[in-house]
Each structure stands twice: as C-alpha cells, then as structure tokens.
Length: 91
Image (tube, rainbow, N blue to C red; front, side, top):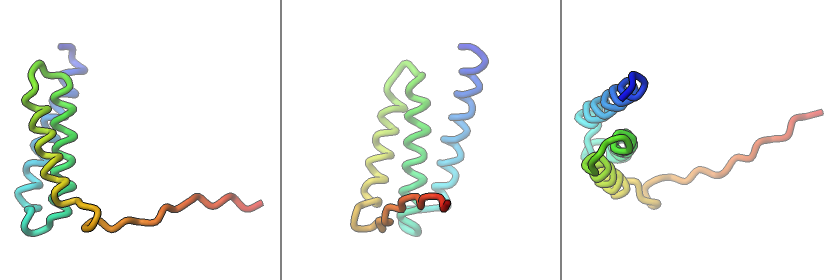
C-alpha cells in the first residue's frame, strides 16, 4: 500500500471515529433525525473503508448503519423542500 492510500485510510478511520463520538452525544432517543444523519455519515465512511479492504466486515456494518438510519428518516418524518429552480440572469 503506497503512502497515498495509507493517508486516505487513516483519514477515513478518523471519520469513523468522529461519527462514533458524535453519536454518543446525538442519541437516537434525543434527536432522532440528527442521529439518523450522523448514522448515515458513518455508513458512508465505513463503506469507503470497506471498498479497499479484503473482507466484507466494514461493508456489512455500513449497510446495517444505513438501514438503521432509514428507520428514522422516513418520508413522513423528513420535511420535503420544494425544488428551487435557478432564476435566469437579468439583462
């Protein structure tokens, strides 16, 4: 593994640790939508780590975290924002 990939792996490990620390504060019971967003971020970080590893452990953990996040981020609970189209420049 060259220096670049080691650097990237270390950064992703830091992301995972950061998400896990944040999840200690943003609990599912206290702030469920914030928790779900952080859980989703954790899933992304784990999947990126898992892409470069030999086994499937990180990828399986990523899928599990995303599934848990989706239990909170339902269509009914997440407000949908209207689509904003860019306004054309005035001439």
